[in-house]
Length: 189
Ligand code: GAR
Image (tube, rainbow, N blue to C red; front, side):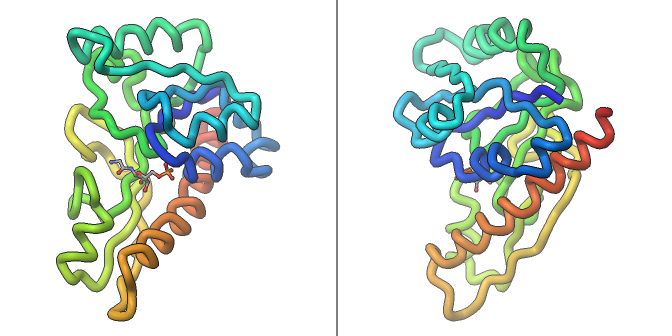
């Protein structure tokens, strides 16, 4: 199954997917990274794995729909079955969604619907919650909404710092995102 990964930042989830041997042996092909941040660390992670990179900056367009149209045109010949969002910090709108209905998956660092939006880990920590989570879901036109595929609880302990919690959430993400993608691969075949 050919997929595009969209990311804006560090790319630890990108790495977790790209380096997963079970995914490779079950036919996952990451055919491109689409990135909206020219200086994002994820770019070097794609380069070092010889994965083609498409950098596209929203600020270079008059509208979000023009920005997404360029992505749609770029992706068309690549024939991707799924788009996997891995820390892609842009809302996806109907220009892209309508071409990949039910085929765009997102990972979010909270137990949705709690703490949707930005800085989800910090906000759960600051609120004194005793748990947060990880959610993987199909996207719709909302922010971090759409049918949920998998959710996991991540505990927050009194002794935690936000950095410790962040690492625990990321560890959980790196465990569950490849598992979810493996299930998608199995369904796709
Ligand atoms: C991840 O925690 C992901 O869940 C989050 O961005 C981080 C990216 O980390 N995504 C969102 O908040 C989307 N709303 P990474 O670049 O190291 O994979």
